[in-house]
Image 1: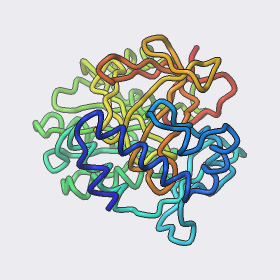
Image 2: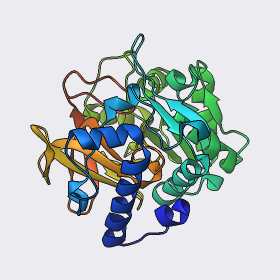
Image 3: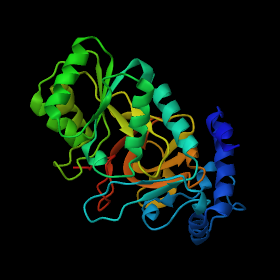
Amino acid sequence: MWIDKIFNHHSDHEFSQLALEIFRYQFEQVAAYNQFCQLVGKTPGSVEHLDEIPFIPIELFKDFAITDEPSSTQMVFSSSGTTGSITSKHFVRDLEIYQLSADLAFRNLVGEPEKIAILALLPAYLERNGSSLIYMVDRLMRQSNHPESGFYLDDLSGLANKLRELDASGQPTLLIGVSFALLDLLDDGPFKLKNTVVMETGGMKGRRKEMVRAELHHELSSGFGVDKIWSEYGMTELLSQAYSKGDGIFCCPPWMKVMTRDPEDPFSWVQGPTGGINVIDLANVHSCSFIATQDLGRVKEDGAFEVLGRFDQSDIRGCNLMVI
């Protein structure tokens, strides 16, 4: 039932109506969300419009099993965090929804994986269990079915050689990597890539100093010899991803929407100025589709958005950059 509704709506009105339906469902079926809604005085009887739905603070994924049926969990994704920190856990009841979300978003916003070789430089994620990013990229590699697609951990020289070889042969290639590892790879540069998309997933993971996105992209584009650096915006608590084809401007798939809240008032909205990023992810139907992140950003009139930093004192996570 939910799969057809989530992935087959089209208009803004249909999105809003489905979001309200999911809100009512999660209010009744997700205990932690119900408790939060009661605390902030929001019930299905008092919520009639999309902008009245309460968004759960993302930190609650660290303390609660946010799911409609804990006994039916098929997989648990966990966040990276930093050494000694408490990680978030996303209890996934229906893996098919995550698979469809990841597949369709990539095809709609990036391209067809069957046509590209995928090289992944995600050491901080490969070194632990439960990464939704590793699950997604591994799935895309299987769809790519290119013999040279693969993950790289410590063999940066081998990756550099393979990258040059594929690019020189004219093979369309995606290099996807965590920010600090892509910078490390430039030690084997410089590169002059013509047939490769370089996509960063953000995050220094404590391995390098944090950088604003513009600074990072300038260094990466210069080092790899490409005009634009693409980006992926995702996190453990979301089953959907947004993508940027350059300049840090992200587009969402049709079942995902970003709104910005007033940094001083979490229940007020801002459009245009910088605000806290709230995400509606309809693919999160079995957990919580309404999440207030610790990211700061700005939403454009067409619904695209940019990430400008993070709130002070928020955890350093793998998917975002700090404001400096």
